[in-house]
Length: 346
Image (tube, rainbow, N blue to C red):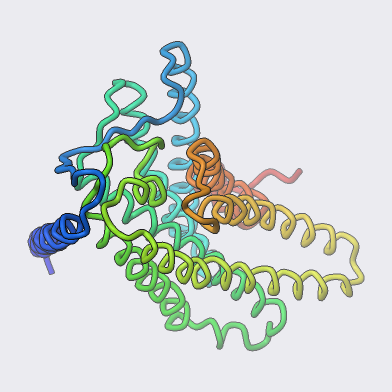
């Protein structure tokens, strides 16, 4: 199929999504009018992202920090993807999942950070209604996908540790592809339902955040938020609690097994790697739980923004260092990618 055909399909899907959004919007507006809300339903063409500090003297510092972290995220993760793709020695399940994680982290940051940089630089903090909903949708989908893929990587490590002789048979290419495509499908389906309900707003369009997050938008929504809260609780249990439990159990079994390894050097290497990975996982899941696993009435915009910076910028920036630069095979592939041959021995 040619690129033109792909673009035609994407344009048709976009038109269908817009029609569906408009239909749901009309339905929800009529519900709001029938329920006689104390505030009128607003016809919103754009939102105002209040973002961080409004003081002009702090804007260059914020711009520099976000730009530096964004460049590290994009360049670091793209180098990992290119190194894995160009080195046949890294065409294994572990590095296949790592390349997918790097791609997701890059998309995750590209969904949010460029708009933040533009807003800080231009001091024009508006985002269109459609753009806000699309940003919220892709943010939720990529966050869920990150959750699922971290669990898949823990599953891969578990199989490599406990079933080394059957590992290549179990983690065959078809199985690996299934372990990646299933999270993609589930993440988009789970992200679509809350987005579909966020179409009518009964409050002013100012969002006390630096991107269109679900909880700040819930406070503006013209609908019964109890439905969304029930949906969020179910999704949190499915997409956060279950993968995190699986990750922790897998790492606990791996560490328990490594304790029986007689080599102190081997123990130190595994413990060092596992502790670094668990640190990033704790940062990611800890901030997600801090923001989302709580009643929306107790949500604090300041706490939400600080936590959001950690899981949208800090953890994607740390992942290339944690998952790759501590791995000798990965370092050698990166050295070959830039044309320096073998990695120098420390």
